[in-house]
Length: 305
Image (cartoon, rainbow, N blue to C red; front, side):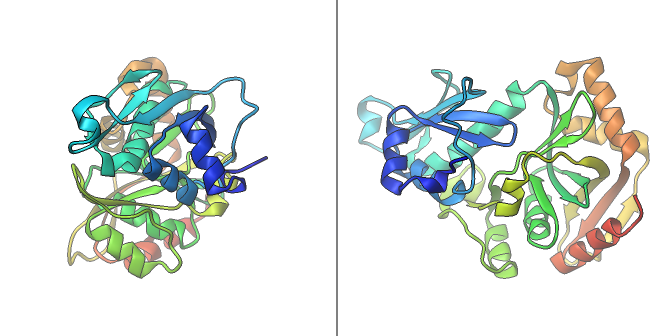
């Protein structure tokens, strides 16, 4: 199967500015079109390993990033995100075009993929067992995820835990990891050989950059994992590492609070959430040093299933 890397940069730009690119990420196919150079640059850099699905008879999402017409095309130029031909969000500064693609694609999945229970969480896997890491912004979730997937864990997702309704397994959705502000420099220094998109400043999240997903994780995007741990991480400066067991009722409620479509799914959502909790060890985790966090996760992974 052809990948994005099989196209030259010129071919990629021409296809994106014309009929669009059918890009497969996990279980989803997205038809993406955009004449904006920064979007094509980001796809060429961070999605080089992803399959192209020119043979697909159906695309889950039809997405375009375009520049508004009129004065805004020239004065403080902007970008808008279109889904199925409609503009879904307020335009952003043109410099934020690639982050807008990433944020918009997250919205597509979280608001449309109702054959899954979708939870706002990072997910990593080792030996077939998945650790689900739900947490609000500022908790250090993505920084921890980036360190783990470059130290023996497989990336299933940085943002969206996809729980299959039919069997309760976690469906992989490996895509670039979104880092912001100080986390960018921390991971640059901590992990050798990382590939980042360029820095984008002054977004609603501050300065952001996206870290390329490990090629091995992308290659194994068709391999689901069994939920084994639900861990609520929290970065605290200077804190000693503390992995504390949680009661299942409290973990259920916190996990449900991080789900996008729990109420939409009704009984199916409740059953899927209960299945995750029943299968998993539930913990809160406070940390300040990545070395300590990696050691704690390695100890969990070493325990019998």
